Length: 259
Image 1 (cartoon, rainbow, N blue to C red):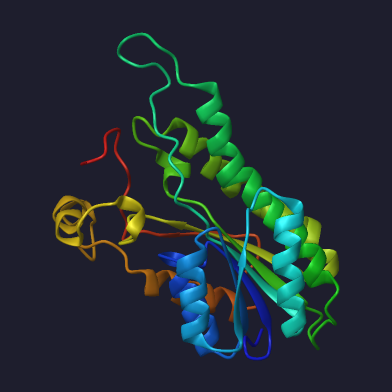
Image 2: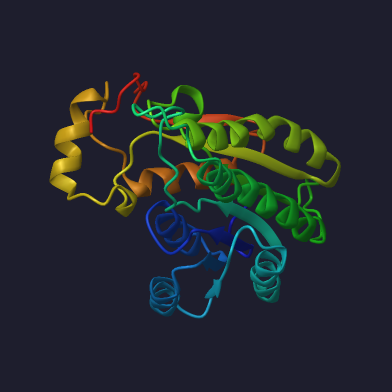
């Protein structure tokens, strides 16, 4: 599918992996809505990138909020691309703490709501918007790309809520692709490893020192531009569908994080 001339929505598009994705899509000729809660950063990025980009303050768990972002995308042209890459939410904690106190159920539910329910909300509403676009010559209408994590496969100690949420994103990929095949919408998921983003809240030098040695090759953290490059490849390669692709330098998480 050709990116040029398509309208796209990127949830979490104001920073990290999302910002890199927005920049890549704009460079390839798409009009993009940055759907994020980070208003100052989102508006600054939209202003920098020009009239084909807009910021819409968006809560991924709200139907009205996501639909407002999709309506803005539709004002640019046919909506064909949705990338759900929102993050920035905590949710850490062991199932049972050393003092015998169990994991907070409220914290677990909030993590699931943000990462899994929010992703599904974007998926279902984006699929409805994309289905209204005229099919291309191939019959394809568009593609939805979700973001999981390698923690969805091998979460470390203290990641039970996050691993459950990201495992859910992985698990719904194939079924959603089968559901949406009838309207010509592909569904894919990227499962990133350790990427250099503000989410870690640590200086880049410390992060590289911590994570670089445990990545088989290349011995460094991933760069947001590499995530965005894979997004572009997924959009353009029509035969990619219903698949989860790990983007991780062959790292496999052990029981404990090196942090």
